[in-house]
Length: 298
Ligand code: GLU
Image (cartoon, rainbow, N blue to C red):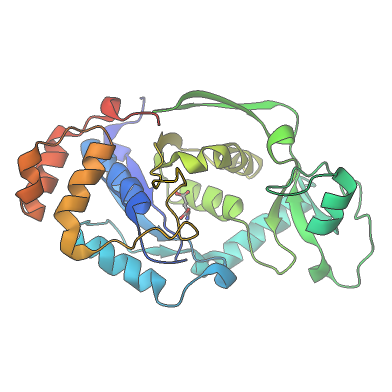
């Protein structure tokens, strides 16, 4: 991978919607060890731009948990809630350049018109040439980014060559919701570029978010990082670990065993004795033995 080791910058970007769980630990450990291996920096960003989904105290709890597991981050933590002006400026620029447009459609009206019934909406651009319905206030519109039918391609360090078509994946997607909140794609794309992240290492559940984020960066003339999507941790029912699937919160008291399990999950073959090691010893082993090539795709 043509990233100069000297400039490598990785990051971990949890959303404060609840406590960290094993799935979060996989992303944290993977991005941390990859940055360490490249002798780069590892930054921490708190994705707190969706207050209705957030849990009070979760951001502090996340920082305490990471500290308790022995992670050390560079720089001060970036809180996305401190970046709202930047996101608003970006939306204004994209509107001015007509890369984005105001949209009056509600989720329900899109479902009705397209026959889609559930899940992520594929928006076919009803309001591209002007909002279909006149609303009384500017705040009654969401803002969508135009996408084209051109394929978006990138090489993922673990998942290999990826080709996506945004028209089929999501259609023109939301940058700013009607309630004024900014989308994850917009905020993440801007912050990854402006924090000069060279490689994003995260769970493969976010693989299909990558083309949208690349598109935002492209439309804002920002640079794009490389991507590396780790296998997803699932529970016995095969569901992705998450707050919705009631994933257990990480317990600092079990940090060594959990780190051992994470290394194993990431294909790193830690020797069994490490289960009884102390935290420093397991991190030492992990840093000296990290091999991206061993990580399974799934
Ligand atoms: N904040 C996102 C999440 O917790 C992840 C962001 C990212 O790694 O791009 O799912």
